[in-house]
Length: 336
Length: 282
View 1 (tube, rainbow over the protein chains, first blue to last red):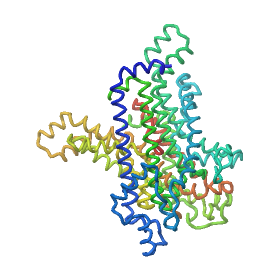
View 2 (cartoon, rainbow over the protein chains, first blue to last red):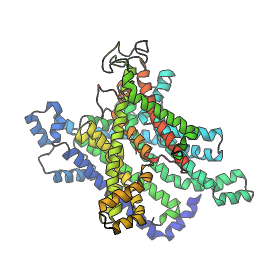
View 3 (cartoon, chains in turn cyan, purple):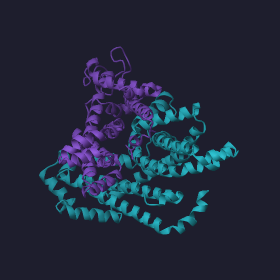
View 4 (cartoon, rainbow over the protein chains, first blue to last red):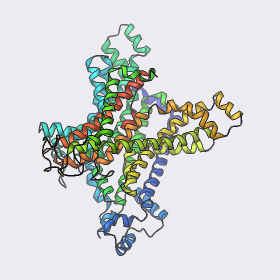
């Protein structure tokens, strides 16, 4: 497709592309830096003394002193920030604060590596379905404007986009578990097991994720397709007697898809956020469940590292999407 | 005035508006019609619908219908408070940035850019982990998430309006900046700025309900639709109504607001893409 012709154009305009890319990478790093400060301040400065917060009702002056020392809270905040960020850059996420309070030393990485893998599997499956489905459903509507299919798809996407994941999930459980008894309402994975061992458990979580992220994608692809179908080159092709099918596939679809890449990247970002809630609905042992548990137990170090990790993934997806769009659409290579 | 209500002439607009009015009425007037105390057990836990409890009882034996009638105020009230606070902060920042055209402008806008690049739900969870679960944290957090987007729109509108003759006339008359902003700029940017207020309100509802569902917002034994879902979902087989009816109420509210927003946008001749709604998660 278009990709065949693109590399030549890219090479010719190398400087602006590189400048654009450099600016985006720099912006991403800056955003992550600010995010790290926000995360650190919220978790270390806001609660006063994190040690007393973690201990909660069990706090005695002695226990607090011990935990303060174990968490190195007696050092100045700037040193702690530098230590944390330096460790993070070297993939050392520190020791769970709650485990320190219990006199153990569980490393954060040990605690979250399993859930991280489970979440990646869930997100990958959802993304696998999301991309072709949102393009397909988005394109059908404008091809049959005003037909029942078009109405169905737009009503569905308007409803789906409005529903929060926990409502969608609960309603799906109501239908497929309570009423029909086809699918299990939870997606438990035994320690050491893989979520793929029991695929039927993954159906409802994936559906919940798809429902929310699909709707937005469908609406945007649909808007792009509607716009392209009204352009002059499509009209000209039709007037020249080109068959309707050829007009759609050769002329319209290609041009409608390029802007959709950005939309799909946005959807992937939504997926990352949506996963936090969806995992909690289905008790799925992923990073979202881990994060919410850590927030509940006020495990500062775990929340800190998981939040930073999610922020990194978020920024990287954004960057990759910018790159792909830039390679697909020459117009966007110019500075806005 | 008539043009303002033109959206009601489309079928989806009328249906959406009707749904919103219905849910708001239930939330606001519901407590006056509740048959039981929402915090007192009225029968065996998780029993099905009966004459005494038309929607059955929850996991502590409390009347689901009464809790449902009490449970709308919190989410709608907090969302309204957060949205109003977000507009107050966002408009102040946007006006300052757009009107001053000094160094404040780029500084504020770069901060806003960074804020917009951070996943909102994550921001809220980090804030709650640091500051604890409380209603104040929830409302301030959601306002902080919304304010950057608002300030960006306000800034653009202010930039455009402040080159107009009536603003320059005000400045030429020697009026102070506050007077010019209050009397000349503000009234002229309100309409474009408030167009998506409904959408932002939905977004506040979605994210507050989501946090309540996670158990990190409003705490038991309060009645709240999202809280009802999370409390009773383990027992969904025993009394599904305790989960499905509050879920339906939240769903109806957000779908209704979106249908209305869609119809309003179309009656104004705009295309409507509810971007903000989904950024709950992203």
